[in-house]
Amino acid sequence: MEELMEILEDICPDVEFENETALIDDKVLSSFDVISIVSEISETFGIRITPAEIIPENFNSAEAIWNMILRIRGDKA
Image (cartoon, rainbow, N blue to C red; front, side):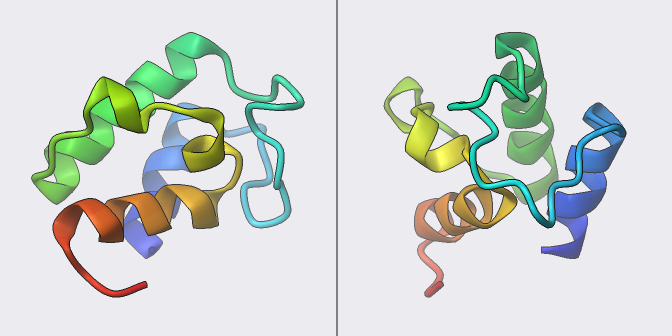
């Protein structure tokens, strides 16, 4: 989770990811931010995020993003 938080803070330094639960719904993240996050996550964690995974429910919070990573990797949340 620490690596994820570093990625998120590098891409969007003005966002408080620890407290935010509606990153997509409240338009905190732009579509470019999401694509940048997907790219960095894919490279850092060695996973492939399919277009089907790029939905608001998976990107509304840092916890949701982390759970998606764990699910794709086959880890338990």
